[in-house]
Image 1 (tube, helix red, strand yellow):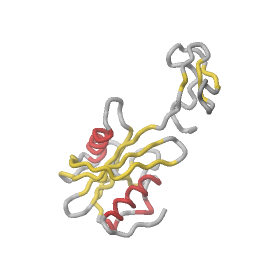
Image 2 (cartoon, one colour):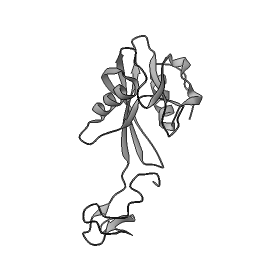
Image 3 (cartoon, one colour):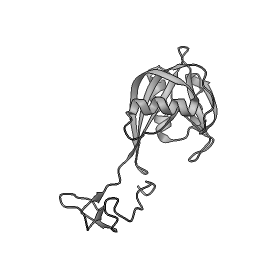
Length: 177
């Protein structure tokens, strides 16, 4: 989890004292612990929510990333959840921000994880309303038929896995992992 933004924290968020690596009582793993106040600084996964917006003609929307990581690659709209936001609310918000597109009728497609930076991606199928447009974090948007998904240009493993599941649910072939 070396890419997690809190993995290099050095001071307790409760009392400001230095954190130490230790195995807390009742735990089995080494954690960052404040020896002064006892606070355990857990490094937890960060939830991401997104949608695969679909039109009634069967086309889906993908956006081309204008930011790192993986600038220039294709992904469905999505991003980190905010505090006090449901996964559905985050998916709708991110779709508005990245594709300027309204979506409704969200249906859970799947939850995707991979080892490494500690991200859990919650993906919804959604009914799209409108054309959409480029948002602040995107350089291009495009509507794709299932057979035209740019498999070799997808941003992340989780993008590939979710789109694979989406295509297979509709009876279209998708590349293996």
